[in-house]
Amino acid sequence: MTSPGRILIVGASAAGLSTAEALRRHGYRGRLTLLDAETHLPYDRPPLSKQVLAGAWEPARTRLRGQAQLEALDAEFVLGEPAVALDAAARAVTTASGSVLRGDVLVIATGLTPLRLPGQDGPAGVHVLRALDDALALRRDLTAAERLVVVGEGVLGAEIAATARTLGLDVTLAGMGHTLLGDQLGDMAGAMLGRLHAERGVRLRLGVAVEGLTGDAGRVTGVRLATGELLPADAVVVAIGSRPAIGWLEGSGLTVGDGVECDAHGRAADGVYAVGDVASFAHEGLGRRLRLENRTNATEQAQAVAANILGAGRPYTPVPYFWTDQYDVKIQAYGLPSPAAEVTIAEGDVAQRRFTALYREGGQVTGVLGWNMPKQARLLRQQLLGARPAPHPVAPA
Image 1 (cartoon, rainbow, N blue to C red):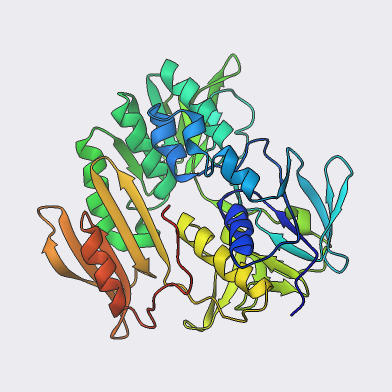
Image 2: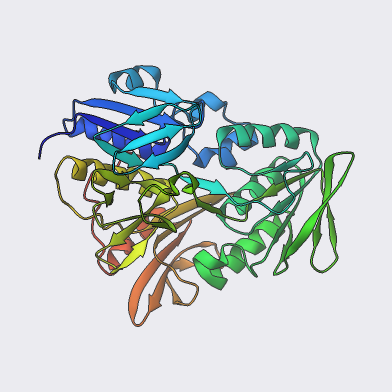
């Protein structure tokens, strides 16, 4: 295969940067451009809800690479320029300023857009947490607040609640689900996580919808539940999920639904690829389409797609993985640990809060959970159907 003369990567976060670095490692020497809506050089997102929000890290510490490393990449960074339209056939991206950027190959790595509550953009003190600027704005509010309400019982909401509680805030977490992370880890692990938060002083209001926000003098004062209960708040974080950032692809000629639909090689159209949170790819090992929202996938998929751009022709068949750190607990999950699965303890002791668990459906192991047992969980992942080492070496997150 002839090496493309120009490659344009839309999105300069972990997935986009990892794609660029992998292209260079595989010997690509052509023109490389990374376009991003944010003004910041590439940074890591997992620390935003923990170390940055807690004030333990300065923003500069989230940078994925130092200046010398970025210069060695020999890539052009076009920052603060949101992509607003794509002509996939021409591989041409139009930006908000009206500029048109083209590539012989285009990589879409635009990630996610946080979901919002109706009316949340009205009063001050209501936040989402996706970008570095979001984390810094929330941090400023938390330093002056006493009461925080987190709306959303998923990973992000639980991490924010844990961080805010360690800062000494009065924290209430509300969500539609009946347990924390129940959709991802099932009732057993979700209930344990709920008890952990309750023991640390977080008030849980689960299994109930949020009806709206209350405010006074232009600032939020509380969250009203469908039961009529009012949760007083000096600040509110909405963490009810995200959607792929694909609005700019309307009329592009690509197939989009729950993300940019790709084949097993990450290809969405001739010369157009997608990576990371925005990519819905065909997983040949599982025989289904997946879209994975986690930092590990951003790196692994980027490396696979970079190799395929240069002709490797290898399908991307990862073992799905995510982790979360809350208080003194490290949770790791491999595979697809559905809430419908049968859960059995493989090692350790649930009462001691140090164990691994296997998730089974139809007699097959479909998921592995590690609760403060990272090494053991990593070893157990080999029991997953089709588990195999990552096809490309992965740098530590």
